[in-house]
Amino acid sequence: MDSQATRLIELFNLKKRDSAANSAKIVSIISGKGGTGKSFFALNFASQLAKRKKKILLIDFDYNFANLHLFLNKTVANPLSHFLLDRTTLKEIIEQYSENLDIIFGDSGFDNNIQMNEEKIERTFFNLEKLAVNYDYIILDSAAGGNELTLRQISFSNYNIIVTLPEPTSIMDAYVMLKYCAVNELKPINTVVVNKSESKEEGKTAFSNLNSAVTHFLSIDVKLLGLVSSSDLVTKSIKSQELLSKTAPTSQIISEISEIAERFIKFGQLANNNQRLISNLS
Image (cartoon, rainbow, N blue to C red; front, top):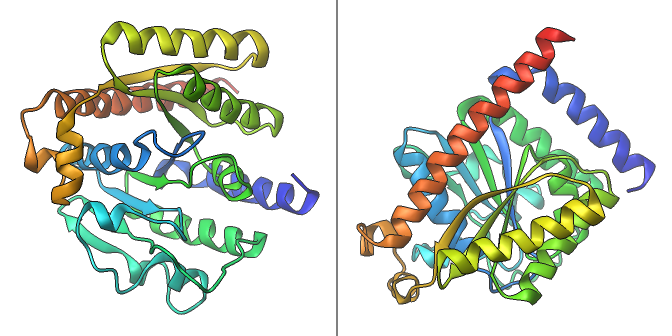
């Protein structure tokens, strides 16, 4: 990162630490490449957190190739691009989906050629900080890959959830994303979801291979957040443009994503307790 970006991040982190007790945690959901089911997971994960009385703001952060609105058959009047073009405030483009789940949608095929420069990134995250007091978690469904926007996004995030597939090429892509974090000294808490696993053994083996490489070559910590099975129910849910919890509420995948949501909440509570302990000892 250049010096200007570094200064912006340092200023943001100083301010964030001052208000950490009252602010939502920012969660980036990322993947090495497209096709991992990242956006599908992000939407259903956010929904399961909301069902557990957590107040959630989900943002489609792939501002030019967004698809969360397609999953829900939504026509978007005020997408994220309107904020980026200074047409509206961030608060004004929030849509309430359910009692505890708010969403900021993007749009697809946007033709105004927005350049996500540092000013736009800084303005976006400082506006998110203003909204943070209203939420437990702000979840960012990022663009696939390690582009500049995604790296800057991760620098402002408390947690990374890396969605990968059990196949070797996807595991390598996840490793590259973690390497980007390590090389650029980005230090969110890193977790992994192995999606479309044919069996628990396959998913666990995939994570074990990733974890071994990360530990050996990068010397950073990454935790397995959970495994999600492969199922035709996902395709049916996408085609029907409804949440999987509505089309198949008793399915194994809903059970798995539900368990991931529970684990994430407990993991976050543990991390917060450890931070408070460190603060008290310092």
